[in-house]
Length: 228
Image 1 (cartoon, one colour):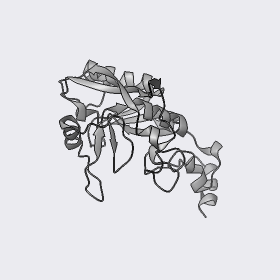
Image 2 (cartoon, helix red, strand yellow):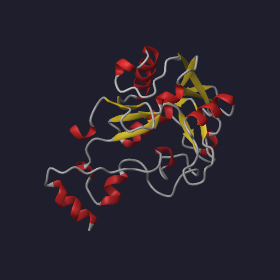
Image 3 (cartoon, rainbow, N blue to C red):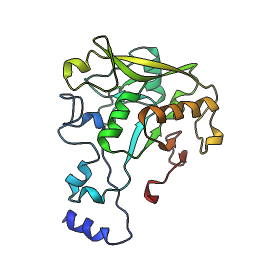
């Protein structure tokens, strides 16, 4: 049985990696209902689904892109249904793995990611596809929403409210030099580092791993999750 095997491993020096397959906002309880999957996708379900206690789960690594995407219908405050959004999608090869359907793309939504960090108990994030943003004169990050004349810093729970929020953007200078294949901070343009650091501030979690291409080795490892 799985729980028994995991309990045996717990008394050895071996490590166990739990991997979630879908995004936090697709969680049946904490996501953008009804545009969700039928199960729990947040990190707490690793224990529920496998049969280990919550105290046995160590470092929680969240994974997100340097921009935001969504497949199918549902609220997407920072969606760019324009030339920029399509360009990001083409550069990032944002097409569904099974269906081949084009993913919706938009600017980085720090509100959603911060919410996922808190709901998922995330210790650090792996920020991927930074190279897709190479060459833009200006980048934008969503820092909050406008809803019924007020500024809010979370995604509302109700479906109708989720569809009515308007993103509040902060503009950041882009970079012309390529980040593709960078494997150290020294290889990155100063403005790219500034972008990453600002994301860290807004989501209230450190970037533990930075990916700069589809290649496995093109990664800047800031913190080894298995070293925790």
